[in-house]
Image (cartoon, rainbow, N blue to C red):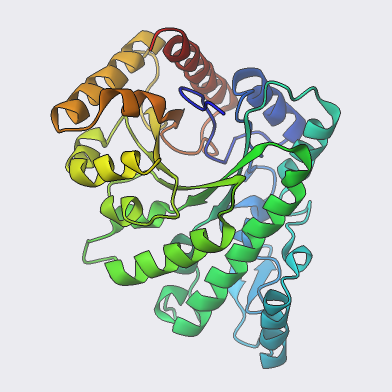
Length: 343
């Protein structure tokens, strides 16, 4: 399977109707389609709330997701029993929390999918997830060893459930772990250490990786990129190539080893935080070529960089308008077609 130059999305879209979102995805990203998060449709489709079902210490209210200090210990024990018994169906994501996922599955069932090279799924990463929820004393669950472990193991099961259902289509499956929180890694406001992050991501990706599954990490900010390159069970690193290529290039030695072991770089080349009126496919392709030039001068192999290159927006599109989202996907499609014809 040749993924070279193919494009996919990150997760969220601004649509309220999943059919319209899927029309956009299959029109512009037919080779690696993904199921869309639709946070404007329902608060339960937010990137943390969407994966919260089944966690006994989390509750949804009209105001959003919160920590339930009155959870029952027996419920937590049952939660772990389901994990030990590998009951992935217990951890399924219901239509109320991910209507786009169910409609995506139906679209794959009803469509001619010969163009589809891979199906992209995603979960919110454990560090972003745990940093987003505070306990009854106002501390992020990131600081509680019991809950961070439960979150990590529950998210593994969420990923395995997706792999189970999408295996039906006989396509390569790519699972992205969305970790925007790690864009703050290394600052005084990010009280986690490298060892804990590596250990957590090693466990997560090690559990879900198999012969037909590629694991990826999406981080839309700057971070210690060696965390991802040094984990052998991470196949794809998705970075904001529009805003942070110079920061990534500082890790050229790590990237060289990553590519040589089969790793893939997914270039988030179309900006999601900048006006698009001054951008074109040609200008963004030039950015990619300039970036490849920078990395080549630092010792990376040009052919490997081209062969192991995927494309995406810089981040999710859930906060943008529908018109902007279509413009971003159209640019992605044009860049992809050009790179595949004229590498």
